[in-house]
Length: 478
Image (tube, rainbow, N blue to C red; front, side, top):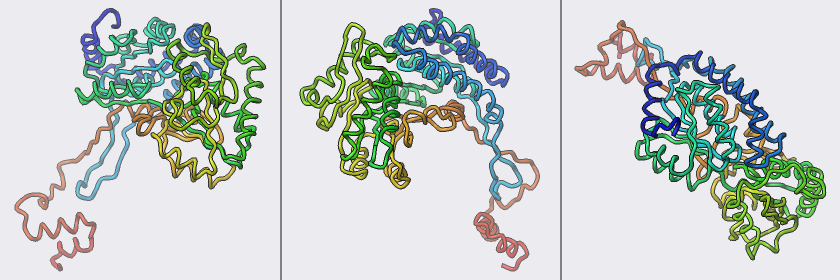
């Protein structure tokens, strides 16, 4: 645990800090947000070196997906925080008049953030930003599968924020298990569904609310009206130029109308060549995170019913955990590659006869974290949006909805619960407390026993909004 303190003592220390009220202060919150923004700016070189060591992620990708996103989020949060913290007025019904009502955002207390390895800085600190903005104390548990970044966060985050209120705990399964045995005011987890179920089970013992940012097989629907060249380039970017498919919203499989499949495959190949040259292995592309995931991906593509469906790629190099961008056409729907989230550089294309068939296929499977549709038809775009369910949708592009801070990012069904980013991060770590203010005047006896016939008639007229009837009862005409 942090500074050698056990999990139980760690949580108690943070509860003691929270009890002082220091973290509720607007100035304190702003200081922490500015500290995280400085961390992103001042530590860019060290961050990108650590990310490259863990994932071989190109510096450009590191800056755009780890540095710039965090810095912008911290600054935007600081700018909008006064508005978010301000009590929200809400109407008061006639039965509670005279009075006024407010919704007050108050911090939950002490929260736990368990992060993922694929975007190890951003996915760690984006939820921490929200927790701090809401006025909470936080424990961050980075992923042990990105050890260089985990060590970096543990070493440097305490230098940029209030280390008595924000703790970083390194470790693997034993440390995470010990943390999960404690009572938290919220747990925020990013990762896979198997571990998500474990976390939800542990949280249930303490009735702790949980946000689960999971994943799933995010589909791409491409119809015959789409600009295939642009669609292929944007799908290639979202699949291979965004951590080489190791993203929870990475395009997992494409549902393409039969007439466009040959052109789509050709344009995907062209995009790869334009991105990385004739030899992709020499280009700026992330590697597989570790040998376990490398072997898992090999098992998917080398499965006997899938191997002969490879139409591009398939090259591997175990020494540097490299698997080439690989396109697989129409594997059996019950094959392993169609049953589990790929989370790597393998891209499946399934041929469909129509958009209706594509929608039916998507709806026959667990709800995905993201869905992408490429079409020039507004009617098709709306049909896909209205007739499918997913965490989020991007039309005629991939991934970018997650970078739009005004949009909530989160799953539905098997892809997760709860959402964050922007104001949604503030809200997910806040309790919305209902407050009604009343004075001592106008203490009408109508609400008190004994409940006479006249009182019953008055209260019925009052609560139904029958103000004419109310007046007639009061003046004795009804």
